[in-house]
Image 1 (cartoon, rainbow, N blue to C red):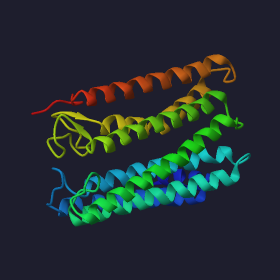
Image 2 (cartoon, rainbow, N blue to C red):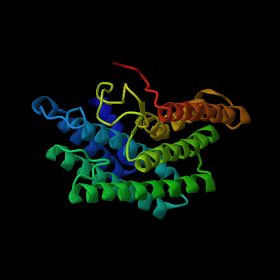
Image 3 (cartoon, rainbow, N blue to C red):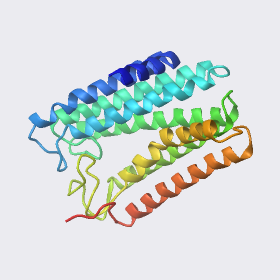
Image 4 (spheres, rainbow, N blue to C red):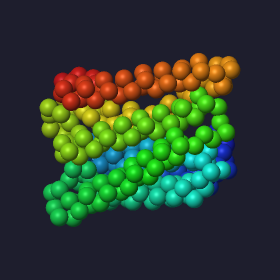
Length: 269
Protein backbone atom coordinates (compact mmCIF):
# COMPACT_ATOMS: atom_id res chain seq x y z
CA UNK A 1 0.00 0.00 0.00
CA UNK A 2 2.85 2.38 0.78
CA UNK A 3 4.31 1.83 -2.69
CA UNK A 4 0.91 2.51 -4.26
CA UNK A 5 0.51 5.70 -2.22
CA UNK A 6 3.96 6.90 -3.22
CA UNK A 7 3.28 6.16 -6.89
CA UNK A 8 -0.03 8.00 -6.74
CA UNK A 9 1.59 10.98 -5.00
CA UNK A 10 4.21 11.16 -7.76
CA UNK A 11 1.59 11.00 -10.51
CA UNK A 12 -0.61 13.54 -8.73
CA UNK A 13 2.24 16.04 -8.56
CA UNK A 14 2.82 15.68 -12.30
CA UNK A 15 -0.76 15.56 -13.64
CA UNK A 16 -3.51 15.50 -10.95
CA UNK A 17 -6.46 14.65 -13.22
CA UNK A 18 -4.73 11.74 -14.94
CA UNK A 19 -3.48 10.46 -11.58
CA UNK A 20 -7.02 10.39 -10.19
CA UNK A 21 -8.51 8.75 -13.31
CA UNK A 22 -5.70 6.19 -13.40
CA UNK A 23 -6.31 5.28 -9.76
CA UNK A 24 -10.05 5.08 -10.40
CA UNK A 25 -9.44 2.58 -13.22
CA UNK A 26 -7.20 0.52 -10.94
CA UNK A 27 -9.83 0.44 -8.19
CA UNK A 28 -12.68 -0.44 -10.56
CA UNK A 29 -10.57 -3.23 -12.04
CA UNK A 30 -9.91 -4.57 -8.53
CA UNK A 31 -13.63 -4.49 -7.69
CA UNK A 32 -14.59 -6.30 -10.90
CA UNK A 33 -11.94 -8.92 -10.16
CA UNK A 34 -13.86 -9.88 -7.02
CA UNK A 35 -16.95 -10.65 -9.14
CA UNK A 36 -15.27 -13.44 -11.10
CA UNK A 37 -15.72 -16.24 -8.51
CA UNK A 38 -19.42 -15.43 -8.15
CA UNK A 39 -20.36 -15.46 -11.84
CA UNK A 40 -20.54 -18.81 -13.63
CA UNK A 41 -21.39 -17.35 -17.04
CA UNK A 42 -18.94 -17.50 -19.91
CA UNK A 43 -18.44 -15.22 -22.90
CA UNK A 44 -16.17 -16.50 -25.67
CA UNK A 45 -15.01 -19.29 -23.37
CA UNK A 46 -14.05 -17.17 -20.33
CA UNK A 47 -15.71 -15.44 -17.40
CA UNK A 48 -17.36 -12.20 -18.66
CA UNK A 49 -15.58 -10.05 -16.06
CA UNK A 50 -12.06 -11.00 -17.10
CA UNK A 51 -12.10 -8.73 -20.15
CA UNK A 52 -13.15 -5.53 -18.33
CA UNK A 53 -10.64 -6.30 -15.57
CA UNK A 54 -7.86 -6.51 -18.16
CA UNK A 55 -8.97 -3.29 -19.84
CA UNK A 56 -9.29 -1.33 -16.61
CA UNK A 57 -5.86 -2.42 -15.40
CA UNK A 58 -4.25 -1.71 -18.77
CA UNK A 59 -5.97 1.69 -18.91
CA UNK A 60 -4.72 2.51 -15.41
CA UNK A 61 -1.14 1.84 -16.56
CA UNK A 62 -1.63 3.80 -19.79
CA UNK A 63 -3.14 6.88 -18.13
CA UNK A 64 -0.54 6.76 -15.37
CA UNK A 65 2.18 6.69 -18.03
CA UNK A 66 0.68 9.74 -19.73
CA UNK A 67 0.67 11.47 -16.33
CA UNK A 68 4.44 10.94 -16.20
CA UNK A 69 5.30 11.78 -19.81
CA UNK A 70 2.99 14.62 -20.89
CA UNK A 71 4.20 17.18 -18.31
CA UNK A 72 7.59 17.22 -20.04
CA UNK A 73 5.79 19.28 -22.70
CA UNK A 74 4.29 21.74 -20.22
CA UNK A 75 6.99 24.35 -20.69
CA UNK A 76 6.27 24.74 -24.41
CA UNK A 77 2.78 23.30 -24.99
CA UNK A 78 0.65 23.54 -21.81
CA UNK A 79 -2.66 23.71 -23.69
CA UNK A 80 -1.75 20.65 -25.75
CA UNK A 81 -0.85 18.74 -22.58
CA UNK A 82 -4.28 19.50 -21.12
CA UNK A 83 -6.02 18.60 -24.39
CA UNK A 84 -4.24 15.27 -24.83
CA UNK A 85 -4.65 14.27 -21.19
CA UNK A 86 -8.35 15.11 -20.90
CA UNK A 87 -9.20 13.58 -24.28
CA UNK A 88 -7.34 10.34 -23.58
CA UNK A 89 -8.99 10.01 -20.15
CA UNK A 90 -12.47 10.64 -21.56
CA UNK A 91 -12.05 8.17 -24.44
CA UNK A 92 -10.68 5.39 -22.22
CA UNK A 93 -13.45 5.87 -19.66
CA UNK A 94 -16.11 5.77 -22.38
CA UNK A 95 -14.73 2.58 -23.92
CA UNK A 96 -14.40 0.83 -20.58
CA UNK A 97 -17.96 1.72 -19.60
CA UNK A 98 -19.11 0.03 -22.82
CA UNK A 99 -17.01 -3.08 -22.11
CA UNK A 100 -18.36 -3.26 -18.55
CA UNK A 101 -21.94 -2.87 -19.75
CA UNK A 102 -21.56 -5.76 -22.18
CA UNK A 103 -19.92 -7.92 -19.51
CA UNK A 104 -22.86 -7.27 -17.20
CA UNK A 105 -25.21 -8.30 -20.02
CA UNK A 106 -23.20 -11.47 -20.58
CA UNK A 107 -22.29 -10.70 -24.19
CA UNK A 108 -19.12 -9.82 -26.04
CA UNK A 109 -18.10 -6.21 -26.53
CA UNK A 110 -15.67 -6.23 -29.45
CA UNK A 111 -16.72 -7.59 -32.85
CA UNK A 112 -20.23 -8.08 -31.49
CA UNK A 113 -22.83 -7.07 -34.07
CA UNK A 114 -25.45 -9.56 -32.96
CA UNK A 115 -28.05 -6.83 -32.46
CA UNK A 116 -28.46 -3.22 -33.52
CA UNK A 117 -27.50 -2.06 -30.01
CA UNK A 118 -24.39 -4.27 -29.91
CA UNK A 119 -23.30 -3.08 -33.33
CA UNK A 120 -23.74 0.59 -32.45
CA UNK A 121 -21.85 0.16 -29.18
CA UNK A 122 -18.97 -1.62 -30.92
CA UNK A 123 -18.82 1.17 -33.52
CA UNK A 124 -18.84 3.80 -30.78
CA UNK A 125 -15.96 2.08 -28.98
CA UNK A 126 -14.05 2.09 -32.27
CA UNK A 127 -14.56 5.86 -32.50
CA UNK A 128 -13.34 6.32 -28.91
CA UNK A 129 -10.14 4.42 -29.63
CA UNK A 130 -9.62 6.24 -32.93
CA UNK A 131 -9.82 9.60 -31.16
CA UNK A 132 -7.40 8.40 -28.50
CA UNK A 133 -4.99 7.24 -31.21
CA UNK A 134 -5.19 10.61 -32.95
CA UNK A 135 -4.29 12.52 -29.78
CA UNK A 136 -1.36 10.15 -29.22
CA UNK A 137 -0.19 10.90 -32.77
CA UNK A 138 -0.41 14.59 -31.85
CA UNK A 139 1.60 14.02 -28.66
CA UNK A 140 4.19 12.02 -30.62
CA UNK A 141 4.57 14.87 -33.10
CA UNK A 142 5.07 17.32 -30.22
CA UNK A 143 7.79 15.16 -28.64
CA UNK A 144 9.64 14.97 -31.97
CA UNK A 145 9.18 18.70 -32.58
CA UNK A 146 10.46 19.82 -29.17
CA UNK A 147 13.36 18.88 -26.92
CA UNK A 148 12.30 18.94 -23.25
CA UNK A 149 15.01 19.43 -20.64
CA UNK A 150 15.57 15.71 -20.05
CA UNK A 151 18.48 13.41 -20.98
CA UNK A 152 18.55 12.53 -24.66
CA UNK A 153 18.42 8.73 -24.18
CA UNK A 154 15.25 9.20 -22.11
CA UNK A 155 13.77 11.60 -24.67
CA UNK A 156 14.40 9.11 -27.47
CA UNK A 157 12.91 6.37 -25.33
CA UNK A 158 9.73 8.44 -25.03
CA UNK A 159 9.66 9.23 -28.75
CA UNK A 160 10.21 5.64 -29.86
CA UNK A 161 7.88 4.28 -27.19
CA UNK A 162 5.11 6.48 -28.58
CA UNK A 163 5.84 5.34 -32.12
CA UNK A 164 5.68 1.68 -31.09
CA UNK A 165 2.46 2.36 -29.19
CA UNK A 166 1.01 3.54 -32.49
CA UNK A 167 2.30 0.36 -34.16
CA UNK A 168 0.42 -1.63 -31.53
CA UNK A 169 -2.66 0.46 -32.24
CA UNK A 170 -2.32 -0.36 -35.93
CA UNK A 171 -2.44 -4.06 -35.04
CA UNK A 172 -5.73 -3.30 -33.32
CA UNK A 173 -6.88 -1.75 -36.58
CA UNK A 174 -5.96 -4.97 -38.38
CA UNK A 175 -8.16 -6.90 -35.96
CA UNK A 176 -11.07 -4.64 -36.81
CA UNK A 177 -10.39 -5.12 -40.52
CA UNK A 178 -10.43 -8.91 -40.06
CA UNK A 179 -13.43 -8.65 -37.66
CA UNK A 180 -11.53 -11.06 -35.43
CA UNK A 181 -8.46 -11.17 -33.22
CA UNK A 182 -7.80 -14.81 -34.12
CA UNK A 183 -6.32 -16.12 -37.36
CA UNK A 184 -7.01 -19.64 -38.55
CA UNK A 185 -9.45 -20.46 -35.75
CA UNK A 186 -12.71 -19.01 -34.51
CA UNK A 187 -12.74 -16.67 -31.53
CA UNK A 188 -13.68 -18.14 -28.18
CA UNK A 189 -11.74 -21.39 -28.35
CA UNK A 190 -9.03 -22.72 -26.08
CA UNK A 191 -6.71 -20.04 -24.74
CA UNK A 192 -4.09 -19.24 -22.13
CA UNK A 193 -5.29 -18.53 -18.58
CA UNK A 194 -6.64 -14.99 -17.99
CA UNK A 195 -5.37 -13.52 -21.28
CA UNK A 196 -7.30 -16.16 -23.29
CA UNK A 197 -4.71 -15.86 -26.07
CA UNK A 198 -5.44 -18.69 -28.46
CA UNK A 199 -3.54 -21.96 -28.09
CA UNK A 200 -5.01 -23.33 -31.35
CA UNK A 201 -4.25 -20.58 -33.88
CA UNK A 202 -2.82 -17.13 -34.39
CA UNK A 203 -3.85 -14.35 -32.01
CA UNK A 204 -3.22 -10.72 -32.95
CA UNK A 205 -3.93 -9.57 -29.40
CA UNK A 206 -0.40 -10.61 -28.42
CA UNK A 207 1.37 -8.23 -30.82
CA UNK A 208 -1.26 -5.62 -29.99
CA UNK A 209 -0.51 -5.95 -26.27
CA UNK A 210 3.27 -5.91 -26.69
CA UNK A 211 3.13 -2.91 -29.04
CA UNK A 212 0.89 -0.86 -26.75
CA UNK A 213 3.05 -1.47 -23.70
CA UNK A 214 6.14 -0.23 -25.50
CA UNK A 215 4.90 3.08 -24.09
CA UNK A 216 6.10 1.88 -20.69
CA UNK A 217 9.03 -0.39 -21.59
CA UNK A 218 10.97 1.76 -24.07
CA UNK A 219 10.85 5.08 -22.14
CA UNK A 220 11.86 3.19 -18.99
CA UNK A 221 14.76 1.66 -20.89
CA UNK A 222 15.80 5.12 -22.08
CA UNK A 223 15.58 6.45 -18.52
CA UNK A 224 17.77 3.63 -17.18
CA UNK A 225 20.30 4.06 -19.98
CA UNK A 226 20.49 7.79 -19.23
CA UNK A 227 21.00 7.05 -15.56
CA UNK A 228 23.60 4.31 -15.78
CA UNK A 229 25.45 4.85 -19.08
CA UNK A 230 27.71 7.89 -18.92
CA UNK A 231 27.98 10.45 -20.28
CA UNK A 232 24.24 10.58 -20.95
CA UNK A 233 24.66 13.39 -23.50
CA UNK A 234 26.95 11.39 -25.80
CA UNK A 235 25.93 9.38 -28.85
CA UNK A 236 26.45 5.94 -27.30
CA UNK A 237 23.59 6.05 -24.74
CA UNK A 238 21.17 7.25 -27.42
CA UNK A 239 22.33 4.39 -29.65
CA UNK A 240 21.64 1.95 -26.83
CA UNK A 241 18.11 3.29 -26.48
CA UNK A 242 17.52 3.06 -30.22
CA UNK A 243 18.91 -0.49 -30.21
CA UNK A 244 16.54 -1.54 -27.44
CA UNK A 245 13.64 -0.02 -29.36
CA UNK A 246 14.75 -1.89 -32.49
CA UNK A 247 14.78 -5.20 -30.62
CA UNK A 248 11.34 -4.43 -29.21
CA UNK A 249 10.11 -3.62 -32.72
CA UNK A 250 11.50 -6.93 -33.97
CA UNK A 251 9.68 -8.79 -31.19
CA UNK A 252 6.40 -7.04 -32.01
CA UNK A 253 6.88 -7.74 -35.70
CA UNK A 254 7.64 -11.41 -35.08
CA UNK A 255 4.54 -11.83 -32.91
CA UNK A 256 2.44 -10.15 -35.61
CA UNK A 257 3.92 -12.40 -38.32
CA UNK A 258 3.36 -15.45 -36.15
CA UNK A 259 -0.29 -14.55 -35.54
CA UNK A 260 -0.98 -13.74 -39.19
CA UNK A 261 0.37 -17.18 -40.11
CA UNK A 262 -2.03 -18.85 -37.70
CA UNK A 263 0.64 -19.93 -35.22
CA UNK A 264 -0.21 -19.73 -31.51
CA UNK A 265 2.25 -18.29 -28.98
CA UNK A 266 1.90 -21.46 -26.91
CA UNK A 267 0.34 -24.47 -28.62
CA UNK A 268 -2.20 -26.51 -26.72
CA UNK A 269 -4.72 -29.21 -27.29
